[in-house]
Amino acid sequence: MPIPKPTTFLLGTPLYAKTAYEGDEVWAVLDVLYFNGTYDSYCAKCRRESTFQAKVVERPAAYQRNLAHERLDKQNGIDPKVPSLEPGLYVVHAHCTRTNSHKQDFVFFVDREVVPDHAPPKVLRTIQKVGQQPSYGDLHITQVKKYTHVLSNEQLSELTRAIGLASHDVGVGAYVYLRRIFETLVEEAHQSAVADPGWDEGAYQRLRMSERIAHLKSHLPNFLSEHPGMYSLLSKGIHELSEDECLKHFETLRIGIELILDERLDQRERAQKISAAKAAIQKALGDAGA
Image 1: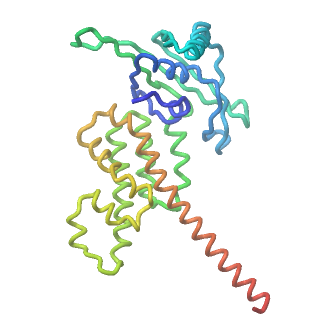
Image 2: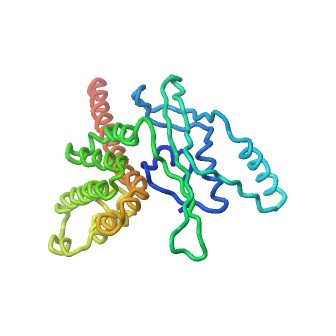
Image 3: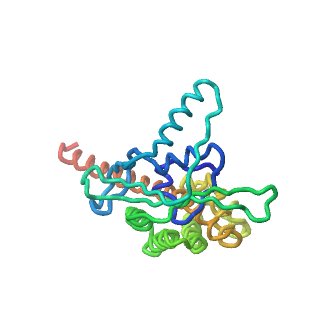
């Protein structure tokens, strides 16, 4: 699995989910540890979306030299020299561009360990996020409130619990709640489809989940119907994967669920605009005596 982009690693990776890297992937790791750019995130103190500026206090001279050499080597068609990265803690600081005193901080742990019972001896290099403020849960739980109008109170609670569990390294439990939300969305589409002419409930009940999703395509958000494999991954996580493996893929699945809900929000907003426009047109016609 490739090293995520710095902003994805900062905001999207739950705590303690290890990511292994090797060879020239160290450049991507260095880009995370010495990130010096901007990103958009929810500011817990402004209580709104904002742009944050990450600022490295000081980049190691060796990293600067290696980065310059790497670019020069690439231009000359030479394989760049891979820099070494010492194990230890690294911190990325960022401040809100609206209010400088509003901060976000991310702590990473880089490690090396010898893989046991491996011949020849192999060194496993890893990076993991071991701390942040505001917490992973605080950043994302606040954002899910926008789905209040397209989720029931129970569904909203389940999504909040999933994010909260992932922020405390409980990957399997988080998958349970995400799968419940997924199943509820499919069941809501099922209840809508029952009114379709020629609906065969018996045939539907005999279908597997992936087949049900295909069968309900016209009643489901596009992203859900186009990615039925999400359900298989959620089920596999609950029954087969370890906590670490679940955490590794949690962010992908959370974003998938939110994209499904975003479609619902768009549909709701469009319906409201159409309703308002119809009422306004009728009023205008009435005012004009048409």
